[in-house]
Image 1 (spheres, rainbow, N blue to C red):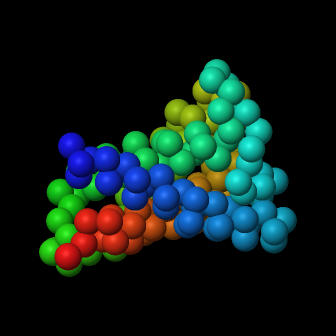
Image 2: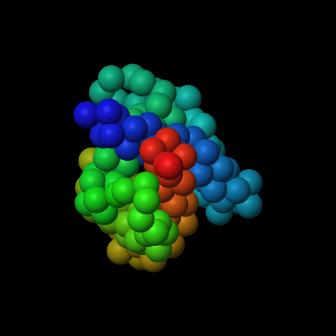
Image 3: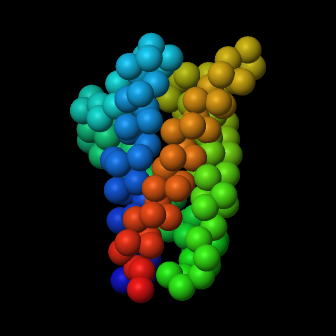
Length: 138
């Protein structure tokens, strides 16, 4: 149980220290309209957006690290983390989350949205592995 809690913490922290800074760089460059560390309330519970994102990062951290059967003493699956975050999380966002939030599924915007999602979510994937190694390492 402690192991799963630490997986959650790794994914949660990766949102704050990896996902959001990449989003900030993209926002600063004028590529995305969404600013990082957004405190706007999310529906239906009214929690700040950053806490919602970090919570779901923690949940996905449990999923990713469990799927990888992550062990502190094994060589780190950095590319797996990069691609899991970049592809799996981005596809879930585009196919499930965006339509639920009323953002639709616009095929003309799909390549750009996928690329941006890949950048921020792959940073999350690598960050989750780094935090997992730090929290559960030797």
